[in-house]
Amino acid sequence: MTKKLLFVFLALVLCLSLSVTVFAQDGMPRLVDSADLLTDSEEISLQKRIDEVSEKFKVEIVIVTVETVGDYTADEFVEDFYDENNYGYGENRDGVLLLVAMEEGDYRILSNGLGADAISSGDIDDISNTISSYLTDGDYADAFNLFIDECEYEINGEINGFPFKFTRNLVISLVIGLVVALIVTGSMKSQLKSVRRQPAATEYTKPGSMQVTYSKDFFLYRIVDRQKKENNSSGSSGSSRNVGGGKF
Image 1 (cartoon, helix red, strand yellow):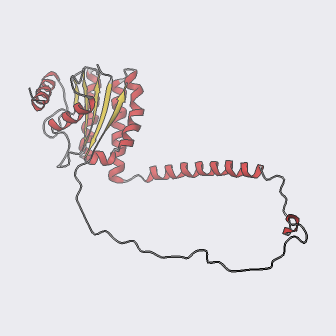
Image 2 (cartoon, one colour):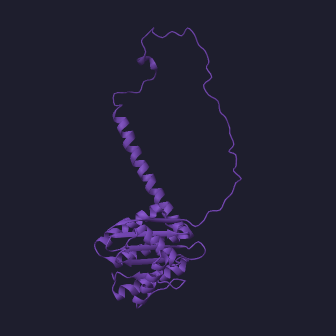
Image 3 (tube, one colour):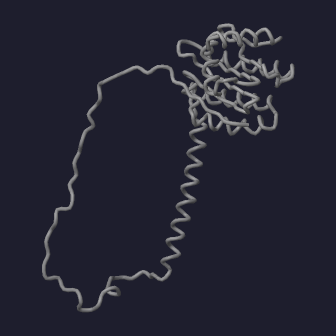
């Protein structure tokens, strides 16, 4: 059985095994709990949230749980599952997928297209830090809700901007910079307690020891004004993708 047929078969089995599902634009479920980690009420609640966020931003949010990834690595499985089941909006396949593999204790987050623009590799690390402890404790519904929250926040910021986030980061940076400056200047000041203000430099020279017998001007530097040459070459970039995660 080829890799493509394997994933198509798995998708069909998952569709038949789920009594209530939210479907992507091509008919595949957005929530695939084949490892049976959620109660019926948790599934219904998560399905509603996934559908709302996906439709609102036209970026597909997908959560998949499996017992095992089999002979694949978690990275291979999450990429193949996303591609073979045609997740994502538009020609760039805009979407974000969370995979949880129970036997291996692996989780992976894949962001694609606009999803990758919104959720970078660094953002995936941040989301991982947010949800990993919940996965470890078996609080799967809470982990999945936090994942949706983070996706909604980052995607909304990518589309509509982050004025509040910029202001917050600016204030934090200024405070950190001020504290560091106070520490450094305080340390330098403590080392200069023996120095007192003097009206002239006579205290630092020996009378009669300094005699100027020769002087000359030296050319030290010049100012050169250079203009950057514009690069007129252009090119198009394809759909971007980020994958990351870890163990729980």
